[in-house]
Image (cartoon, rainbow, N blue to C red):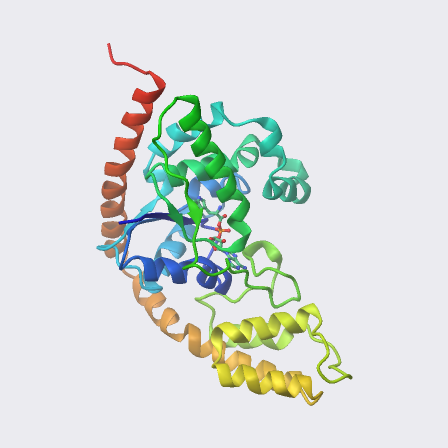
Length: 331
Ligand code: TYM
């Protein structure tokens, strides 16, 4: 059986990018593999060192995980901060990670640019913490979106380096996984290339959004005055709307609007109405479950405690082995 690990930062409710990039695959993989899915609350401190509502954000992601269909009896569902073994492995990996390679990481460069007042060491060593999450369970498959590709490459570097330095064949080489397909990148509604929590108001549709909120965001989405030449290439913002439509609408619906676009008859108001309707229908089942689960604190506590216990078993074994491999001995 394959060992699968993946995580999501608790920066608020999950959006369609999280769902189609990662969560959808978690749900499928839980039936076939040994899965560890967690909430990356340590990671969230790299951008929000004094978070306003850490617990509330963790709860929102936990509820979304469950609403999306993860079965806590099948998968190990836990909080990263319930597994301090993660921090110990992170420390060991940091000893063998070099400043140059960490500084070259795209996500570090982006964050150093967007938060110049807080370029902290956790931001720099984000990839070693992420590698620790993954190799702590000696995973080989990691369902993630396209934006995480480079982090996975770095995870392989750190895992291989550990094996080489200590002359062992202990950690497998984990790969980003999407059932043999290209990794996914869901665009934003504001014309930007990526749907994301921090990309600004109106960019993302959350699984917990009300129908009114969805309508407002979709209707405000960026468009232009429409094509003037048949079969012309779509500008980015229009391409984005079609990409979003492909994930929530029926194939015939997409084909219908493609045809209207290609024959210059498209009315973006109609496309947005359809997209609104399909997004509301798509998120409906999540919304209902989210409301129920949020009210059930006792169940959530049970899920998290069970997850911590299961995750600890696998993590403790790895840390024992790693300490032994490095040469720590008991007196
Ligand atoms: P995070 O919290 O930014 O996103 C969680 C997951 O959602 C995917 N994702 C997207 N996929 C497609 N299109 C989008 N617009 C989009 N936005 C987000 C991400 O690729 C990710 O799979 N570093 C990770 C969290 C993490 C992790 C790990 C993941 C920490 N440790 C170990 C895997 C394994 C992150 O910030 O994801």
